[in-house]
Image (cartoon, rainbow, N blue to C red):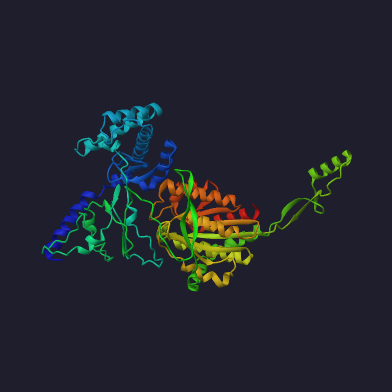
Amino acid sequence: MELDQLIFKKIINLFRRKSSVLTEEEEQRTVYLDDIRGMLTILARVLTGKPLEIVTAEREGGLKGKYIFLPQKFFFLKNKELNIKYYQYRVFYLTTAYNLLQENDDLSYGNVKYGERSDRIISEKLIEEYPLIELIKDELITELGNYFDSKNLPVDNSWLLGNIKKDDSKEIDAKSMDDSFDEKALPTPDTVIKAKPVEEIESVQVDKKKQEDWVLTHNFEKVETIEEYSGLPRDFDGSDSLEDDMEALSEVNMRNTIRVDEETHSIYQAEFVSNALIADSKESGTTETHYLYDEFNYKTRSYRKDYCKVFHRIIREPDLEYYRNTISKNGIVLRNIRKQFANFYNKLIEIKRVENGDTLNIDALTDLISDIYSGHTPDEKVYNSKRKKQKDISILFLLDQSLSSDGYSAGNKIIDVEKQIAILMGEVLNEYEIEFQVDGFSSKTRNNCNYNTVKPFDKSWNESKGNIASLVPGGYTRMGPALRHANYLLKQRDTRSRWIVFLTDGKPNDYDKYEGKYGIADVKQALREIDQNDNHIHAFAIEQNAKYYLPMMFGTRNYDVLSNAKEMTIAITNFMERIVYG
């Protein structure tokens, strides 16, 4: 970089920093959306009875479909309590708008302006349902006016209203989808940077012909720039220049994205809502052995017959070093699990109404006397006996290998937490001779659902424990076919109690249509099929936000959210005691 460019860059950065830095007083009263997102999500769902989601807005935000957009942070009001009230009021206001739209009320789309028709309709309905909200609204308007007066700026009440957007999602052409999937280990990104909020994106289809025909041009200018998408894609070289481009990226409209399979060495993370409705992928043939499974379509309330292809592979790629490191790093956790497991596993339980035992069963004795006096042959099983219960159990661990498991939760890599749980539980189950299997899954469209077994039921733990490391992230999360295949495999076991332990971090999704309500409905149907086969399932979610959407699929008792070793110990031992003693 030339000297004059360097000086110019430093001066510009200095002005930017000064204009964007909050004062100490503003920082103390600032409320960040991420800190209260959970509370606001629950509030929005209670007010509407629908699974609405809270998303970070570029500015004041608004409403689009099932998404409520709110500012990333807010500090305009005089204290933190009022700024929290601001977020709560926005949720009340926008959920009222959502309910009115569901009732086909004639609200106008676009920016809601203070005092105009749409604002009057929403405000009247809001105050009618929640009369005390009017006092909060008046207080917020007054304090917001005071803030803008203190800055010598015109009052901007749009921060209390927002933009009501029409759901204009477009369907991606299924013909453009490539469902081939190379399940190799992904490169670890060299640079990961969080992007500024983006309210919505448009998924652009890559025209391979235009990309190949593109000719590099050079204008002999000193300043390097980044330009917004103009209809002509460039080559995807995967190089890592993210840090060098950060300043330019902060000024570019990041609304256009593409979906590609090329390797990348940097990640620019942004929270957004896509306006693309993914289409169903077309049928593709294959000569490789696979299983066919139905998929449930909630709109027609019927199955799509033989719709998904599951490719089941046995993986034998031992890495004992990963296993040893896991045992070493989680030694205290493993000791605690072993200790608590021993406490309940060897516990005696009371068997009622037996011929010989330790104590009399009063109910059985009463029945015996009644039978004698009535002339019936009495049942001589009038004792209770304490003995060990037979542990006739099969457990199948199903690990989510989708690309999202390559991320982090509470400072821990998600795929590593999944594999650690499998290894720690495998150690204990092996010691108590309880049979188990360890599998992983990922997908790329309905035509390519990968199902990998690293520890089969009929192989010993010592022979298989090194294979756990071979489960690597890649692809998407089409849960239904994986759950149905696990259900099929578990049904073959001749045991009394059969359980799927499902380890995941995300919602159901795929490269083709499997988003939102469609995917959730299919998972719920797969869970019903598991129950119909007298199998059972429990999910461990390694992601804090999972508590907002897992209940929609698994109910309230059939999952745990894990984030640290203590929670892992408690959750695992409670679950094991539940399946051993019902």
